[in-house]
Image 1 (cartoon, rainbow, N blue to C red):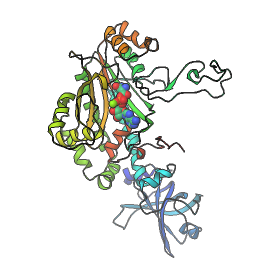
Image 2 (spheres, helix red, strand yellow):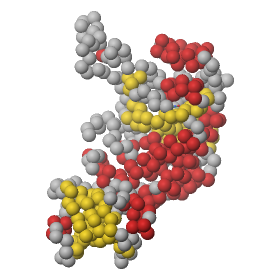
Image 3 (cartoon, rainbow, N blue to C red):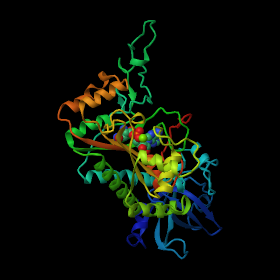
Image 4 (tube, helix red, strand yellow):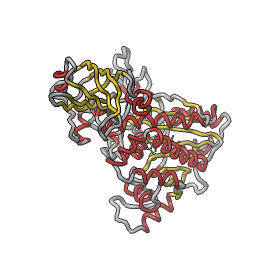
Length: 461
Ligand code: 4AD
Ligand code: MG
């Protein structure tokens, strides 16, 4: 069986040869004497045209095939007289593997993304979602390639954790069904707070703390896995389950961190444009006509840099009316982030040195005692796509900050150990994988770039 991808990439190898392909029917058009099938096997974004003639013994059954049916075609690949495709498969034999039912919900017409979310198990068979998920796969590979080529070690950090990596309390608790001796409280009721075989555990919000400890052994590391946030926000950019890429580098400061992030972003864009040109063309034509110029602009430009304090000043000076107030000490909202990257810089921009109150406990305190060595990368159309920092490597400063925030040191002893045994400057960041895919495709809702989105009230499938 030949992959449709290989036929499109190397037609010369297959032309005038007898080959076999399999896949799912996108459309069938038939007259009395012959017909056409658009066949997609999922390996390539465009479909292959199959021509079939009356001489086939099951001609009538094929002419009646319902979209979605699974078939296997044997035939000769011939140069096509039609202008649309340079070649087509002239069928000698078509085997119907599995008929699709009459109520197949995907029709040739365009369906709304809202509707397609209700059939998340079938939407990968549409052109848009075929392109999205092929790009998602290519980008995941590009990320591994980028880090592996630079000597980073890929660390698998745990999904179930005993500590809150962000100290923000936005966690999903893990409970143990079927645990035969669950801990009981004073009234004899099950104490769910200690439900992981007697310990309180949660789904990870970030692999960072674990990856920091590996950074202090391997120098350059990254993790790439699912993370979970129990934030009940119903936006187009937040999901309760999303994937994050978190590199961490030792003997490095915030400047090194930003350099790495910029290099990575440019590498990914270059790689996906080269590797998935058909999909990217599709997005540029149908999702966002300015996509290519935006991505080109990223490749050509150097990312902007501005401190949080200057950003606040710029936003206040702009005279723009925002829904949320712009005030030193308040976190930037999406509208502010987009204004900065779209209007003020017109390219991705790093905002650095945020007030300590709005950032996590592990960020390195700046000399001023009010701000921390944080960096967010804000991108046009999406807003925050990366969040990172230089870490507090000084044991006394870290302990002091944790005390101020009321964090329980017992839970973080292992994390403090990293500062006790050969502490070194280090920095890292988290790239939101879905936000990156949105940025690269022009898709505007996070629910449409992850296979089975988990958002409030959305956990079927
Ligand atoms: O800014 P965040 O919360 O940073 C961290 O978790 C750090 N521990 C990362 C690190 O330094 N190693 O999250 C990082 C990125 C954000 O910039 C955003 O792109 C994405 O993760 N993100 C989300 N994406 C989708 N849905 C959500 N609910 C997200 N929360 C964060
Ligand atoms: Mg953040």
